[in-house]
Length: 138
Image (cartoon, rainbow, N blue to C red; front, side):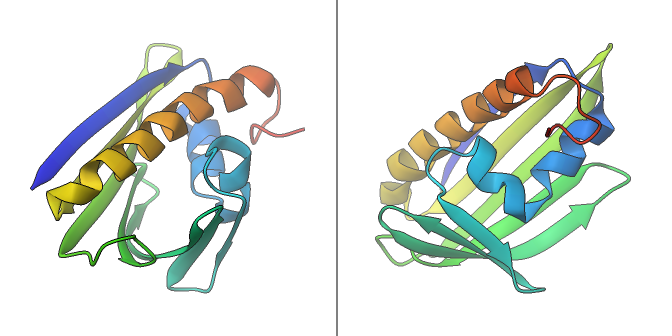
């Protein structure tokens, strides 16, 4: 199983960061590979240049600020196992965003790893461009 983790420090209150990262409609604003996103009550549907990804929401824990999901459709190879986790942690006067993935088959790891690396960088850019808003948007 391929496992990897990326993290970034964001100069924002953890609750502000959490609000943006768990708002599905905002994903295209911080995740470069996603052009459109919506939630149907159970699954997130993410449109990319390569097609649509469908992910099952596994955990959304507001107290822990932990979000977990599993891709269930749309990957270029059949998925044996996937778990994506985003944690928003307090870090002094800032937030630490930790984005980790576990995936099988390992042949999907370079694709998912590259996308998540770009996503974590996008989180930092997003909050750099929206420093004053209560929800991270203007």
